Image 1 (cartoon, rainbow, N blue to C red):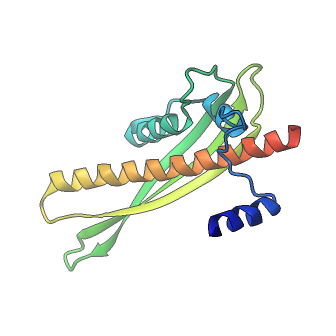
Image 2 (cartoon, helix red, strand yellow):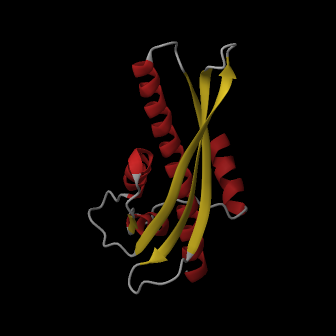
Length: 169
């Protein structure tokens, strides 16, 4: 009952889920357009993690859809010691990942049709002289950053495509 009331209220204010399928059960406009996005190559390991996360989120369940757009991403991670002990050694590292992105049409190639920015933070502990454990923690934190930034970029793209579908239909 409460769910029905909530759905009625949100429908009355114009709320429409971004990933909502069509009445026939086919992927909605945002899902179809997301599946038509090709992600450019990104350098270095953190870039590879972000590209892989984006490809997972943009992939279509309904088979291969030809790429209509290219997603260009500039991604970087910066780090700083935030817990320092008396000998000036850091025991906790904060990582901040940031990405600027732009979406361009593929055929014909043209200027960016939308762009955005995503940022996420994470941290990990450095445990004494256990360098291997610290490297694993660093890799895990970079993976979490890539996942969080991929989520943000995907949502920004989905909102853009949903708005475009609303304007044209």
